[in-house]
Image 1 (tube, rainbow, N blue to C red):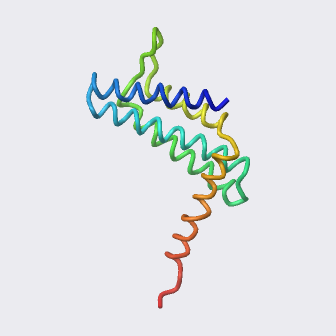
Image 2: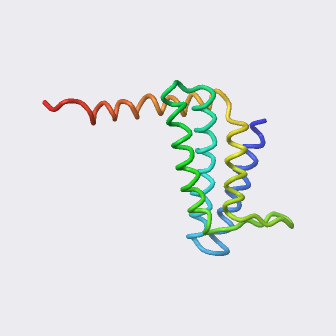
Image 3: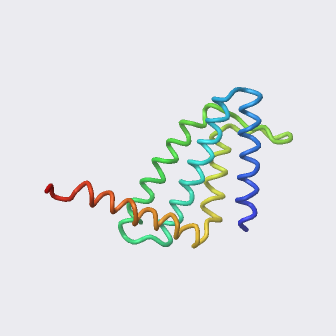
Length: 132
C-alpha cells in the first residue's frame, strides 16, 4: 500500500508547482513545507509509538504534535483544487499526516528511529559533556 503514499507525494508536487506558477512562489513554498512537515509528523508518530523505545514513545508524540502545529501554521498560505473538490491547506496536510501514519512501514521507521538515536543523542552528548 505504499503506492498511496507515492501517489500523494506526486500529487503534492504537482499542487506545489501549480501553486508556485499560478499564485506565487510563496504559495508553492507553503505547500511544499506543509506537505513535508505533515508527512514527517505522521511517520514520526507511527515510528515512535510502534517501534520506539520508552523515551521515544514519550517524546515522539510531543515532537509530532509540534510538527502538526507547524504544518497547520504553514497551511494557511495555499489551497488545493483537485477535479471538483476543494481542500484547504490544513485539510491537504491532514490527509498527508493520516496517509503517512497508516502506511509508514518498519523500514521507514528504522530510518526515523536511527536518526533519532544516532545523531540526536551524539549531539546531546556533545552538548552535555564536561569541559576540558
